[in-house]
Image 1 (cartoon, rainbow, N blue to C red):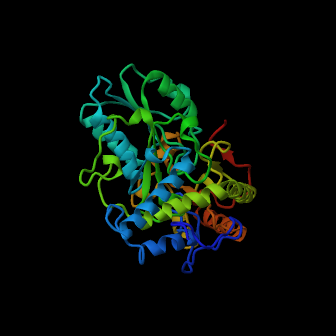
Image 2: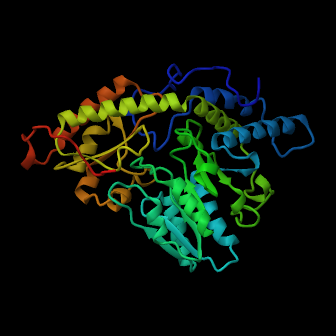
Image 3: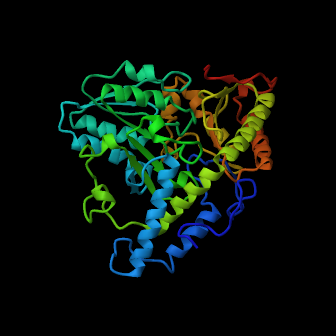
Length: 421
């Protein structure tokens, strides 16, 4: 059997859902996806029988591992429409984001010391940018319009002759809104700035072509596309190579000197397998998820008043729904719902914080609405029955969490979207 190819061939509609203990309905796929059983099956031999180090060049164990790594790299590259040698394996999108931002800065020997990003980025972009600022780098953090969509004209307004790097995520991890990445990338190329995008939420969910997007650096994470946690990659295009990106980890010279450390062959096999399945199934999966999301939103609109959709509903990931409710006690809403549905109120990385989502606040959502918000992420194994049950749980939880002064005023009204395209 070819390394990394699962023996069980299933379509998106009949794929076996991973076994899970009885618990809440899982609608938190932006935080993490379950490992697809086909991916786990492909990975398992490289944990047991095929355990060699891909850096061992003198015997068959190493050759077999090296071959598996080559196949995995080719599958990631194919998903991105990139070349194999443009894929650098990392531990995930957080490391990839750090390598892109800090690596470009550390390698820069020019007068270009200005970095542009947005207020809605993941913390693994915002925190490195703040570190760069402390090192004397000029930083511009773009404000974002109410619809949550970053466009080319927003970036054009802040570019400077000495802009070194622009980092704008492909899709927001909370609202699911898609940014105008291709136009922004084209602008950066015209102005001589490097362009990085965090594509952790879009990779494997929609077609990606790094050339068409005009990106120089692109981050992805395996656990967002049904591979295990702890593996990811950074696409490094021609304009970002040739000494324009410094490594953060030094050691054995792996990954072309860009990222030292023994490669976790089993995880790479899983990532390659996940990319292969994603390529084959993403179109069908996207249509199915959009149908389920529409069904969920329509039900909630019919039965609840004061519902707001956060972010542009037309330019967003098909499995994302981010909603807020007026006149609702946010803490009580979470308490009533969390034992029935697995959801988020913001980024999973910030789930221990009691502060409202920085993304929703950046969109102009009030603190009260941000605190009474739900991020629902549908995924590969979500069923219509689960969507219908979720709607019932949300309706009941919202009604129980209504502030006393508004209870009994239950006439449903059409949901007000926080956006207009």
